[in-house]
Image (cartoon, rainbow, N blue to C red):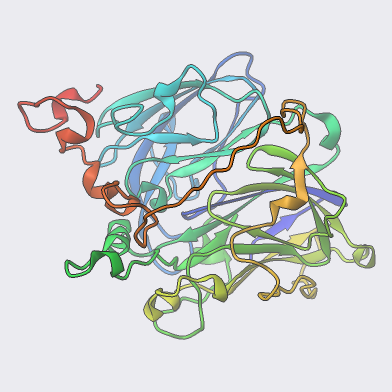
Length: 432
């Protein structure tokens, strides 16, 4: 079991959720650089084992000058920068397919070509070619992340954190720990995507489509093949869940949220003490975790990640439900004492009162609201908004996420250009 040792009595923690395997990654700390944060990466396929239940192909991102990928450096490196700092990332693609990187949450002011959306802001990077992303960090501090924006590469581990360091001295006395919660898939990502896209010709609007179900959930672990307590399931052995929201808690701790998706926030007067936090895909929270008065003499606690059965899609097949454990535990310590915690959860989830869909943000307000318009109402508009949608919540005639793999292909000239290409392919118009 992974152990996180906290030296302070009050802990400042950053939470993050995405769709992929996670572990302790390499850190690029550019906060001490005077000018430009310069990074040189190679992207490559590799074989790794991260949950102790078998090797599988993954995508690794590593410094080009290191020459060889390493499974212990996974996922992609974490980048620390200053507010407004210029960032240059040279990406060398050694995959067997094209790729791009999208920098999630960054404004990309005056640098739209670095946003990383293939066919929209750039031509994808061909195998054996490179591309220089050149952009600026936001002026405000916050927790961001980046990921591949091509097909299913993100599910194979092509993602990482980008953190714009805090300039506010309010929290300078707190110890900063990053906790990543993530999914691990054993199946080939393209097969998972095909299952999600599946339709029948007789009735495409009512065909069964389900999100892929992860085999494991990992939290800040390195190579789990030797150091983690694990059970590898090969058949229907437990009552399990699919990829839904996670509930995060620390036994005998109260959580104060101070950041949500890079926005600094404060609690409203009517907010109740928070004991567990609902986290969805790609969400980032920063919290301060306080030991409760009755637990001041306890030094070992469980971090708990729980999932909600009642938030599952109704059409999730039983064979898919039998993939993922219901509860995940990680040890945190305030000292170097041995042994497991004996604390119990004080944040039981009441499915009757706790909604599916994430944390109730109405209890929070922006910390800096000076840029908001005045609250005085000067005009009133009554609007009726409706959608004519199929089960994918998109009307007919509109390209859906479930068809994007077929529509946006590099060998489909109509995707990117409106004139004939004599090769009938985009090969000749790729950016070298």
